Image (tube, rainbow, N blue to C red):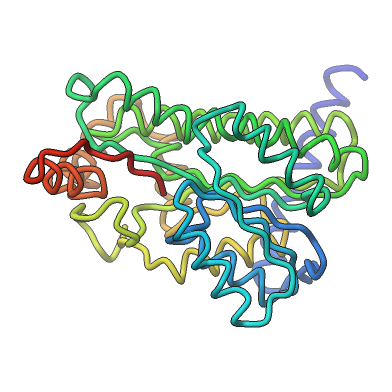
Length: 321
């Protein structure tokens, strides 16, 4: 195909998908049925991981719950059974360890079956400026937020491709689209997660595996405690999100096969501006949006634990979500 014809084809497809998007803003999309699907959620012991698990339970899905926090995970399983879930399986898994992910994945395949919806939700944040962040915590951030996605997908994607049926969900962050002061390691890990998910989407398109969907979720700060203490400069433009709202948006987006979910919706506009404006405008824009100071009052899980354990003289635990 020559340059002229291929360019016309590209323009035509862009116009078609743009008009389709506008049309679907007013016409509800038919949601897919996930009853009987095997849904694996990492970081399911608390926060939006738990809320998503309960929502999928109400839809009749088989739940596979992974979390390093065994007690929290058992509580999620108990709550799911309480609302009527029949098949709930919970596993303790440290998602920072590749071999442990593979081991527990093999266990899931034997005891439950092939996972058809994989939700990579586990995450960690240190909240330190880069030069103040311990090397081990930087490594842990990348291992949990980025590398764990590699290993879970590698474990469960082959069965999805063989059946041409499945869904990969990446819970990333606004910090995977825009850098922020005080979050260098976290931003790098989330940029990596977004890039990985986008690349996988293209791989599956090239292979013609149209039955395997991808959804990339990029929310602003969520009121789960992970970013406790952080304050938004403009609450009406970039509000701190409530977990119930986030979980509902994610599950609804998965049911609609949405490719990207940005929250709040103002992020779609702000992210587009980043691509259009002069690169020099990024620094004043970041200052205006509060990205200079948003971490100044950070009191997330890790720092609260540090205060507690400095008083008791014990070792600071890891902070996984």
